[in-house]
Image 1: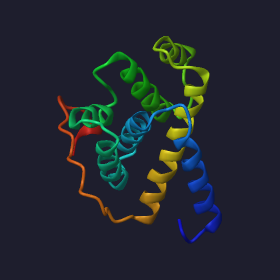
Image 2: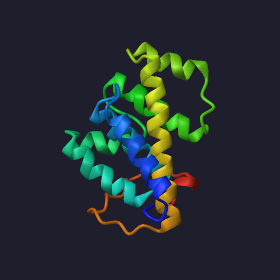
Image 3: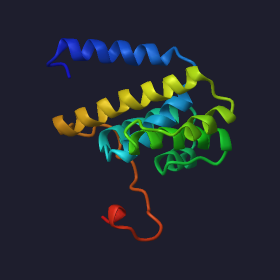
Length: 153
């Protein structure tokens, strides 16, 4: 990213702005983990596992977010909405937004979830293109329950 001062500057500005938004550091890390898992970004999974722990997430919360869920209903709604944004390429249903709002999130939260998903997709894709070497301890592989073609390794 350093090869493009414009890309780096905008990324840092965008990331910095989001850190001062309505979503907590824990919520931003949960989103980053859910998006990184959806996009199979090993570098981001490693980084956000470490950053998530630093933000106060437990090992179980990190694992659950990577799987697209959470134990408590409010966080579960947030993580599932983020994963839906990724899987549906932003084409969410009114019901998806309503469910998030039913758990106490506002239009501001919705906007920031979209923004956080977008910046994480950017870094996931950038790491794929750049073939970034993972410089954090690697995130553990998730154990998938059941068999499905897209989950087979």
